Image (cartoon, rainbow over all chains, first blue to last red; front, side, top):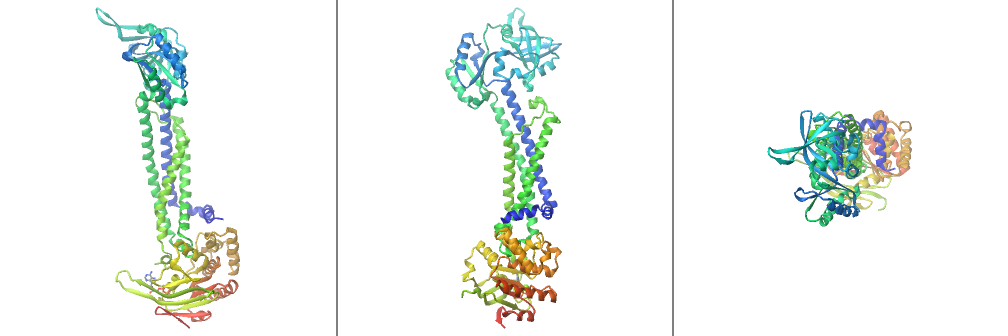
Length: 408
Length: 228
Ligand SMILES: Nc1ncnc2c1ncn2[C@@H]1O[C@H](COP(=O)(O)OP(=O)(O)OP(=O)(O)O)[C@@H](O)[C@H]1O
Ligand SMILES: [Mg+2]
């Protein structure tokens, strides 16, 4: 049997446990546990946040948008040609045309600015998570009906079944008395709830025909939404470039990276900053372990001297102390991961903490238990403990057996 | 030549008294040859340098001048790990105060140098058991040091010194803190073991009587060894 197996089994024996779990060992483990818990919970919550933001943004929006310069409308002819081309690209999953304009809404003395979206619900549900986000009512929108965002509905105090008034100030007709805004009464047939405050507070969906009629265009579109197959999401830029080459000069193109890429990059950066800062807790805890290890070595000087006297080489004596600090460190890390997992589950499921959705886009915490996060935390803590343990071990080589044995 | 285990030539050792820069010249040219299965004793007044000499011979401390050979090889040529190996395989120590490891049972204490020397665990334990029986501690094998008397602890220390079949055992006043009866038993034991395993013993003692029983006895006087 290898000598280390013997020493480990010794530590795990009844008598050894007392020694292994002395008060200062427990205190230093506690530091590691707290650090790992903090890191686990923070990363789980932050990953959850990041994921939900991405899911919603990429759910509400499609991946690539094609418009015309100076807000000109896309004609049927142009659309049909483009649609045919787009569907010939194997990375593209779905295409859907839409109307997009700013407008206002009024109901029961309340008035609010909105984004008006005219869609073919049957096509729209293929390019965005439109269908998934309808929390009340049907996906299909009849003529003169509207699906409005949940927060918006609350703001203007309207509900399914109410009649609301839509107003477009910009496309007004010129009249002797000045600009007369164009208005239209529609019935609220459904509620749209993506979970993202910004969208739920401003979106109003009409069907294509009603919206074209309202803004006064003749079967033309504001833009075309293009959804890529999920596995090609990372190729967005390459595909965008290819489509751009095909597009006639009066067309322009944008994609989710241009629209929201900065936000995603920022979220990723924040996650790393969080990770680095919280790793410092583990680092500090590891120094606690180091000092208890130094104490331990000083306490065991005599034993170290004896081991040296019967020819146990320095590296073997070191490995005994390493084993002890690794056992403790490992217990701390595993307990920390476990408690962190439980803690993040509780925080995520119980909605103890609510968020201000004005600031954070969403109103509750979501947990993402990414195994990659757990591995990262485990590796970080292990590396910190391994490196920190090396510091006090140098002391062992310097201990002179004769000094110890003769008690000088 | 072949049966010389350890040869020391002209060993010098000085200590520097910390503050007042006084040099204390303890060993002033010690020559010593220890042969296979020989029992050697050293006497000398307190402070004459007996422990110092033992530590140097046992490679725990370094001499200022002079050479030490184990089986013809100069220990100056050994690496740190090489020296540790030499101590583990060829040398056994019994200290003036029985330094056992408090976390380990008597049996484990005896087996430890073998286990740490990466010998087979079961064989080590079996050998330790045999040695403990030989030193008369059959019923004490699973006791911890604090549960043993001084004499018993000293016998455990002797058993531990022998576990790796060393060529030589250095014992620094092994009977120093034992009563007469226990001292007698321990010496008896050394002779028995010497007969049985043919190990050389070098022991330091204050008692002329005990010293006289050795095959060779030396006096350490003014930093030099004189044979009786
Ligand atoms: N590390 C040291 N630093 C300074 N002086 C030392 C050191 N080790 C030993 N000495 C001195 O060297 C002298 C010899 O010490 P040593 O322990 O070898 O004597 P000893 O013969 O074993 O004595 P005793 O019979 O009391 O055990 C003593 O005067 C002691 O004070
Ligand atoms: Mg002494």
